[in-house]
Amino acid sequence: MSLTPKLLSFAVMLALGGTAAAANTNSPAVGRALGLIQTHASAVRASASDQFIARDVIRDANGTEHVRFDRTYGGLPVIGGDVVVHSRNGQLVSTSLTQHGPLTLGTRPVLGSADAIVAAGGKFGSRFTGTPGAELVVYARGNTPVLAYRVHMGNDNSDMTYIVSARDGKVLDSWSNRETAGAAGTGKTLYSGNITVNTNSITGGFEMRDTTRGNSTTINAHTGKTSGLVFTDADNTWGNNANSDPASGAADANFGGGKTWDYYKNVHGRNGIANNGVGAQSRVHFGVKYFNAFWSDNCFCMTYGDGDGVVAGPLVALDVAGHEMSHGVTSRTANLTYSGESGGLNEATSDIFGTMVEFYANNAFDTPDYLIGEEIYLANIPGDPNQQALRYMFNPFKDTRSPNCYVGTLGDLDVHYSSGVANHFFYLLAEGSGAKAFSGVDHTSPVCSGGALAGIGRAHAEKIWYRALTVYMTSGTNYHGARVATLAAATDLYGGASAEYNAVAATWSAVSVN
Ligand SMILES: [Ca+2]
Ligand SMILES: [Ca+2]
Ligand SMILES: [Zn+2]
Image (cartoon, rainbow, N blue to C red; front, side, top):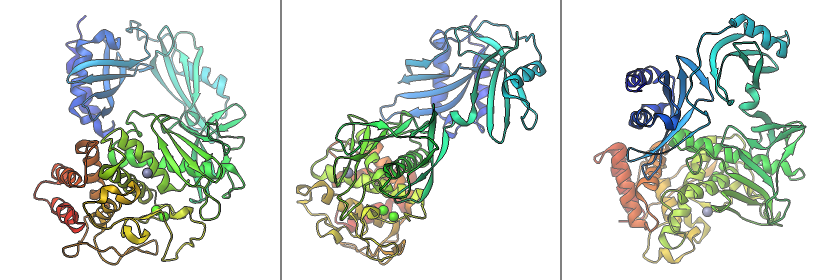
């Protein structure tokens, strides 16, 4: 039987599903993917009774589209029937799914829903609260799809789903809705107070694996230089807010990784560093007195040293985490070469987004500012207006090495200093020039030429930089090219005659980039 008539119902489902589904399911990519399902029914193992409801759309920089659908069969949800359609230029590239074949089963149950609830109660016990719900579904996770009831049953301590055969009442599957969403533990960090860490239940306790963020893991390198094992814990309370417990710094790294993931997801619609939903690994306690942190594309991981213990503690502060992970974003987008002016722009991109992650998290113990790495300096006293930091975006030359203003020889400097001009640009674009304070720290920012600047706010400035990075910058972009790229981004986002466009132009000129 042809799927053609079903296209109409696809369209209707899409319209109805629009508000409940993710915002990006309004994308035209959904229509294209539905068209591909129609012409490639066997690739998604579709039957004539199937309908597909878009749940997520990811579009890569190269135009490749990944549209995720849930499936229904005769109007019943199909558990295990979800599919991702990967396409490029309107052509099917591949599909991702686990359903073994097209569904052919009947949808008339032998048992009623009350029978299914009794069967589930045989597993859960009688101490459930409220009225358990039972819904007829197709259970397609096994080799032979069957008609079943999905029973939801819970109390204060437990929240369970049972799959009960609609033919004979056998409990086919069950899972805890709390565990599949990750277990929420407590992290006692070094720099960010006590925070929630998403972990994973394992036999005998928990592991530091965030199942809600692409299975990001936190690894203990045990002062070695090779990889180690994932942190585990019996009671899901991690660390003691001090270095005496190695899990404290792990909690910081986990927190930084999680906030960075959430920042890119919620502010920029990016699904993980590589935009593929896969979480990165964080490795802490690397080496002995190692005063650095780095991102590696090879291991898709961040590595944090413990600092020298004299000037600095472990480099697991939130802005450092955001900085390192943003190198991964850059490498998968503009891929700015890590030398010369493009290298400075690469470093600045990491400082910019590391700082935007700090503002996004808005943590009470690491309040937001435009300093990089201030939390790791052991001599810093909270509230002191003069904090020591690795870099100062509002006035880069405060470190006596990073120029505030563009000069032709900028590209000869180390990339951590040639980043200064772009950091300065971003600060001025977001916040404006002159005297200002964040978290009690003086942020007075000078201009190199022209009059005072007002700033357009962080929310627009970060969008402009992200679009410039992901759409217009390339590996060889220099400072002039960054000006061109951000102007193009501002045009796309706000219009060529917008206040934002004019501010981008004036702010680059204010740091001598023309
Ligand atoms: Ca801070
Ligand atoms: Ca900071
Ligand atoms: Zn860096």
